[in-house]
Image (cartoon, rainbow, N blue to C red; front, side, top):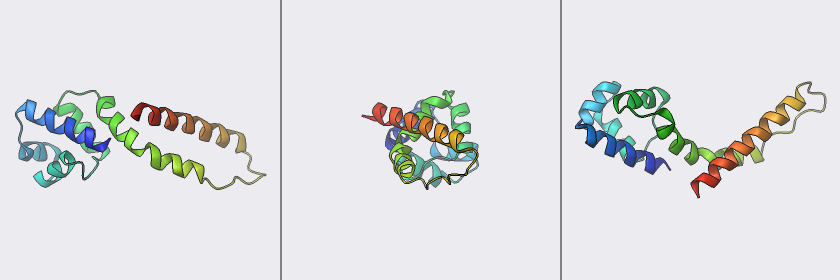
Length: 114
């Protein structure tokens, strides 16, 4: 999914008439950073993502969804290997609810990806 984001970024940049150097200047980064983002070799930081949304007049969810979907399988593995909660943990119920809710979100992202 990071590659889908990279392609969307490249298309948006070209449609806007901006060069990689232009985008790099607006983001305060070297043009090689834009090249890495467009090649799918690197994911944008939250600050970069926010600026790109402003530059290309794109709703954040359009760009974020691709990134979130690419992270779903790694997060799912981490959820499966969560450490056990001590029996005397007073927020045990809240923790369980939070983890179950997160698992549902990750599952939803995984289904969307297919």
